[in-house]
Length: 109
Image 1 (tube, one colour):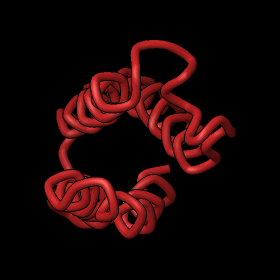
Image 2 (spheres, helix red, strand yellow):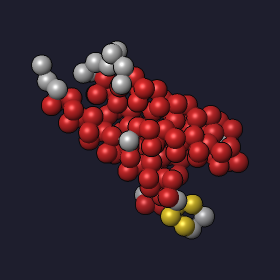
Image 3 (cartoon, helix red, strand yellow):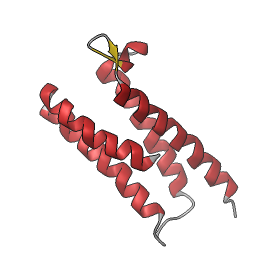
């Protein structure tokens, strides 16, 4: 899920740059953060507590959509149509958060 949302944030940055350079940079940084987390996960440096970091990162990213796009369902629309990038990225982030929390508890010591 981190790979999916990471790549999609990088793709979305090309559209975001039309609205704001700052927004595009934030999309790029967020995408790189997810990709970096996915890479870290497959290394020997991954620790159990990083599941909580991953869950919080995903939740913060979900919540970050609403101040930018609107506080309701309209956040998932662009120019009157459902924005598939927003729907897929937020769904991937929600699944990532749930799985990370599950893995944290399942890998208890």
